[in-house]
Length: 259
Image 1 (tube, rainbow, N blue to C red):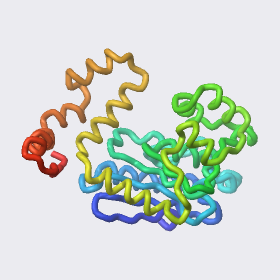
Image 2: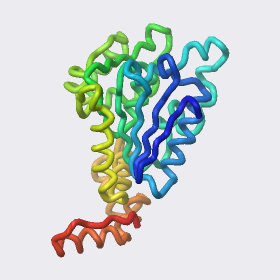
Image 3: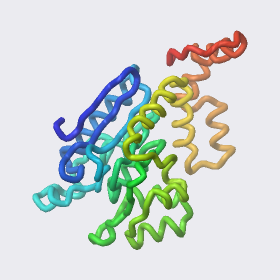
Image 4: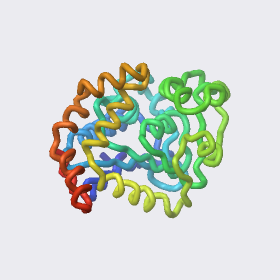
């Protein structure tokens, strides 16, 4: 666990990638991250996670090429959740915030894209330079054309060029640009706001968005109204749903219990 630092405060988990000099991810680190995020997913006491990098220069440059040169196979065992523990983690129905504290390139940018919200320090920079190494940014090739205009996504994938936070914000890749010395405070403020919200609704939102990604509108709505999504069925049968209505009628703040 030396490469991954965790901090838990109430319902919030902070996960820090700490692998000097650049926070690159090798197979062993990816497997640890998968275990950390799977535990976060399965712990009913946790509601929100923050993922960030140690230091001020690197969030994460992605795959550890030095480890690869020493024998780590690019198609090796990344562990549960795939590369970085988030990209393929099933049923993660809790919000994740990426606090990008520096360079986020290659798999590091893909890790940030796996979060639900991205805050970026004002000096952060981004790129998908895999093409220059003769390989493919696989997860980004799937996700990026769905997040930003197709021609821009293809330009970034096919050229590997760098871009800054202003451009990332302009294309909607990041939610906020934050002064570097305020990044983690802002991430925790946002995490506290989310942690105070209704966890069953958060779960339903995440499952609906995931399930509807490639579905026709009416097909997606039918699955929701027929309660074919587990998180939606849980929400509609929950005490929290009744609590929301009671709190509104009684003109008070709701108390969410997640059940």
